[in-house]
Length: 631
Image 1 (cartoon, rainbow, N blue to C red):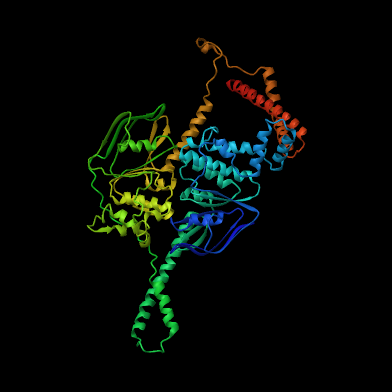
Image 2 (cartoon, rainbow, N blue to C red):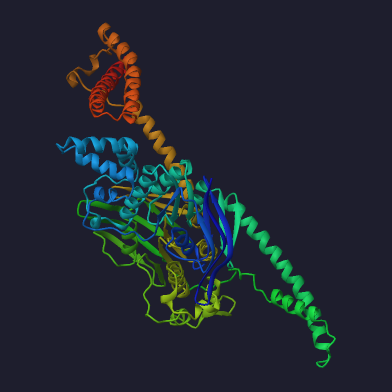
């Protein structure tokens, strides 16, 4: 089934053309990732599909039988309402049915009650509330009475995500789910859960993300937006990179041929007398076309540079027995670490575990409750925070960078101008002379990052640098950091980025414990998973036995076996539990297909009775198994 068809779409802002005459199709079951440099029109294209923007030319046809749902980076909400009320603001028939059903539970109006039950049945909303609570639980949102205005940015993102996923489950129409950077501000555990959910779900998805592991796991098609065009790559991120390289090699080969032809044709053009009218018009036209191709600049300057970093002394940074708490929340307990020259350390852990607090303590922005910090005299920190860029309203990009310095020093005695350094970070000449206020959110983030690096620090501290950065910028940043000779601390939830850069992990594992692990992020996760599995296995095997006699007589305890009566009870329970499960399933099925109020009431009572009996059986079965395990 075709969901969306777009033909020859073009969109410009002023003189800047975002994309020109692009054509694409979205079919049921497609899971597509869009990759492009910030400012190439990704978000604009999504808004056109949502009907929030209009293309300059071309057509977009969206199947009338589908709904389009957007998970945006900007989340609108009323700070005074609770999480539960926010979830119930979903504009869908099943949610409205659920709201009316809840109201009917406190009503004596039989007509209203019957209508609410009929709506629940018509929209198959009986299981929706449980699904909603399950999604919220998976995303670690448990206090549904908390006000939206009291939540952190990460919590708001998770609640909005739960609302979106509930909406796609609530609507029984065909749905195109559009997600713009869904992993931003989610910790690794949440990212992995969402990755698993979307990869298994039978949905149609259009996704913008910079998380390459997430992209590979969830999507099977990549749309690349570059140079006003849209290129389709079927397969993984590696396939996309390979296809892109082949395309650029072919383009460069065409340019080389055009250059050779251009030189010959230019010589011919110069030889012709100005007054001669027999000159071939077609050859002249062809000359100008060849000139256009020959002067195309597709070769992106690589970041193969020998940077002259500010000198590092013998002492880098040493933390000794650091403690830090906020009220009753313990973040750091007796933490010590000595940073080495050229060491690249990744800091990981759940949101709120204390990662940013440690960065603030290191730089003196915050005081530790206890402990010492010794910083080398030659250390010059470069700190990339999540707060964003501060700039004058009409200041141009090039002027903002030149405030730091006119040139960036290289080890060979040469230097890069501010403009050349900007080009390395994908700011073309036109953008360099534009006001910062005109940049997209991602472009401002990239400029902020470049501003930090241009100051030539010898100790970099990055707090979530990959949020809102596009994949081309991430590649440039990764290449820069791999060559960086100074010390580096990165806090990031981007697993691919961490695997490429860091060689050491400090993992915040809760209750002030910070684990020191040598290796990259994936190696740490694998080691941690094995340890957790082993610990769980040992815990099950060594479940403590409840004392039934005084401790002094422990040596004389005889192992207990099931009595004849208990053995018969166990056999009966094991026989009845599957039967109860089957009855429960049948009642649920009947409830989903029953419209009569009296029958629904009776079935609901039967369901409650069977569920209670089943729960009692399960508890007694566990007790008997515990006794049996002692024998």
